[in-house]
Amino acid sequence: MQVMRFRNLTFGEARCRQYTIAGAICSLSTNSQAIHDVIGESYGQVDELVSTPDLTMQFWVDGAPRNVEAWPKPYFRGLNHLVFARFDSESEVLIDLGQRRIIGRLSPEIAANRAYFTRVVFPAIFGIVSETVRIAPLHCACVARNGSAVLLAGDSGSGKSTLSLALAQSGLAFLSDDWTYLSRQGTRVLAWSISNFLKLLPDTLEHFPELARIDPTISLNGELAYELEAEHVFGIQRCACAEPRCLIFLERGGTQKPSLVEMSSVEAAARLEQNLEDLPAAICEARDFLVKTIRILVQVPCWKLRFGGDAPQTVARSVLEFLNGKMNA
Image (cartoon, rainbow, N blue to C red; front, side):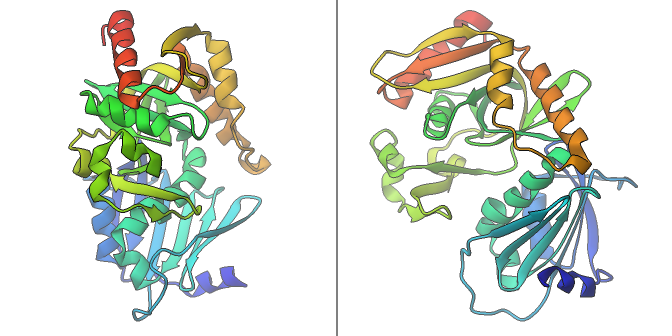
């Protein structure tokens, strides 16, 4: 019944602009200048509109302001190629994976809440549709130097966020701490970020004293965490796009000193592919693109990083020394 409400939406007053998001051309139509502003701040606007964008998005902001929850927990349901998302009582989005189209109505509060839109709404809906627009999402952190990216893969809790931040404090540019998006043209792969935010758990205060002036908050998954724009808090450099030059799998445990061991491309691909979620049969070609992108990606040098209880800065120094010796990074 909720989806039926979209039939009444009209976009005659909407302004259409196109943006390059993770390498995809995305058309955005909305009557909200606030939404255009927040997307424009984060992604490059296309000067000349293309007739067939990779993704079409339509957001209508409707209704008078209401007293609603500032950080509502999103709700998702899917059926075949359709995904329905609700953010608050007046904010609902329908994602059509087959047509590569997103259409929804948002409350004035959601449209005006820049932090919530950039940390919750947009990453959630783009993450769902990314594979169908030939963008491969990988559960990796990423840092870069002079346009060359180092991908850090690992399970949740393996230390991707803290190590990526420590490497950025050592002079590399910070691209992402949790999810990195890959575009591909032929055999060339590029890594992209779609969020400016970094999430750190409270115990990281021991290693990053800059967090002392910030209060942790309850994240949407119920964790107490710091969620922040790292360049503002730590003064690090950011980058939006870089070309992967190596892939490091984090293996945390015990008390051993940091060490890097070479890894075959076959094992690296198997590790990345085992975490892929199944896509509906109607869009199985999207999964094929994702698998092929991974197979190309793992042709770069791959290593396992084994480390124990060392501080992130100590591990970062070991990684940098290794990369400088092996790759002249």
